Image 1 (cartoon, helix red, strand yellow):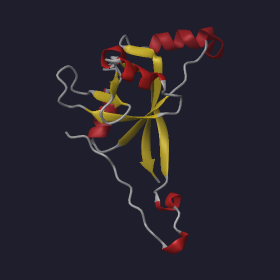
Image 2 (cartoon, helix red, strand yellow):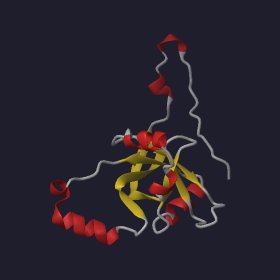
Image 3 (cartoon, one colour):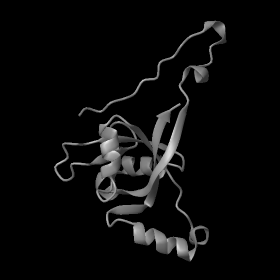
Image 4 (cartoon, helix red, strand yellow):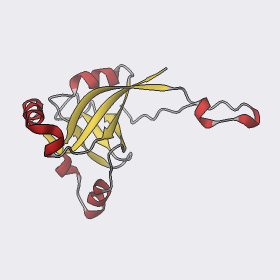
Length: 150
């Protein structure tokens, strides 16, 4: 499956055109909070590390299905740009999202902030460790949203 981009049509209505009004409204539903698997394997040089260091909470990341992946038939790659792969959604948590992507659903990932020990509390850290997959790199947390047009 090739990388696909979704285009939003724009309707021009005379001189009073506002780009925001031409876009369909979208609703985002939080599906998963996770870390990026394989992050350290995909950052190969200083330029890529610098780009990674400049990502701030709220930065949108691109998700691409990789059904031909030799290691995981449900693979979903996480990209900063079309050509800059950061890693993958862990294989322990990707199947449901991959199936929905295959059915035409749109998802987006957003970089999260790393919670300090005071913010998450001891109980929060315990719960997170219980749910964390062995391949997740929680030093780069992301949230994955299902995007529905209203």
